[in-house]
Length: 395
Image (tube, rainbow, N blue to C red; front, top):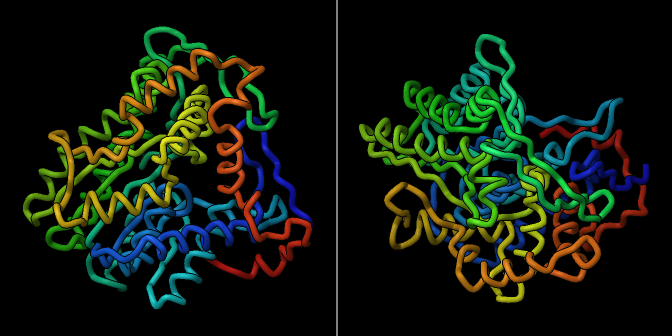
């Protein structure tokens, strides 16, 4: 079977399993080249199969010698398709980690569910007894509550509609996009799905089960962005959810005080992930940002960002480097005045006709394709893929 990328708007409808292996190996090579650092040895990662979660897992395993338990909601090959990129990422990561002599356990299922929390607790008890670090890196549009009720998040503005140019990756074109105004119920639902409630439920369950080691750390991933993106992000429904996530860090930190633990939020830089590519208008800012930061020698991908987080800002010689709100500012380079002035100057000139010559939209599309196993060097995309053989592999 020859596999070609299928993109609808800004959503990938398929993946290339062999390309996914190349992408995982590429990130592993980058961590090995960056060097070893002291870090946690027993790590639980909620949302471990792509983006920041996968990069965290790779950085900690191959940079700090950690054993990991990763939880993700992915699908394997079936009569409906070849499966998701995250499914294969889990497989290839596990193989590489075990070759390194590290333990890598994958649990596939709904991380919002009590059943998955219990399964994770049982796994931790069997494998390690306790964990030293819990990473919360979930991104979802749907949360099924304990009573069976389905709650959905929305990407909308608040106060008034917001209209701007957005990037259609399928057509590789800029198109006008509008974020309508969310209702009060939609804001509440988005906070329920994407805020900090589930993060706190996980830490409560783990602590009650005595699965958290003394001095445990937990970190959730967030984004704030510059003022120019506030109408579509910080002041939108997703911004409300992220503010809730930030305040939850304070509550979890108090909860962990008895065992000397701490909770943090890592405010990451804007990067190409499956979630960020889907947010209306934001990819335009990201395409301009990538070009500016590469020109200034400041660009980081997910893997570089996570290596710097753990090696320098959480487990470095200074300990955790955070502000007074328990935020670890990994967006420090992005928000530098020199970067933002340059991005703003480009954005003011941007049109649907000239966008391809500004910033790094080609790099953005390449990063998006690579998330799904396409456009990676060294992969023969004309070679048929044996889906039956891949179906015998389990994450």
